Amino acid sequence: MRMTKPWALVGLGLVALSACASQPAVEKEAGLIFTAADSASSKTLKIGQSFDVRLLGTPTAGYLWDIQSLPAGVVLVDKTSRPENPEGRKQGMVGGNDWTIFRFQTISAPVDLQGTAGQSLVLRYGRPWELEAGRPAEQIWRMQIMVKPGG
Image 1: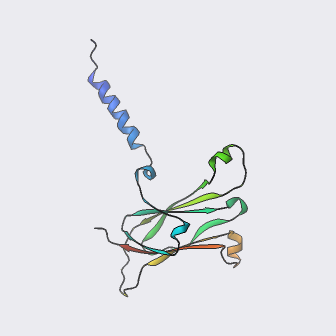
Image 2: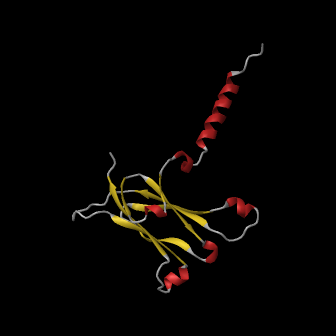
Image 3: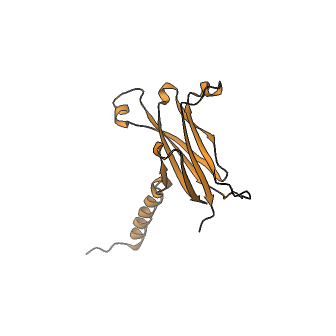
């Protein structure tokens, strides 16, 4: 019977550990996900908490989601876009809707000396050149957010 050398087992263990470590943080973290249905709601979040806002749009027609205002204590970490129908795109379909995914992180709890509620995260949807020219947004997504110290 042939014996396995100890260094070979150590090498296999390191390969297995590195495979686990290479997973993106997005897959490891089961964060909060908000959609169009969550617009006009209020949320209380803890410092260090991340959350996504996923909204459907038509960037192929020039319509994009962007940030109109961020509450104090919340920062944008990432903004990505994914097709609503990836299989259709693989088959050569052009146009269509895309999911815009904003990833936010709470970094601090604002000092609130007035006792007012949190501030709003506001996202707007429209063609950037029309918005810059003063045309109102096609859609507004808004959420009242209060950041509290963790614990």
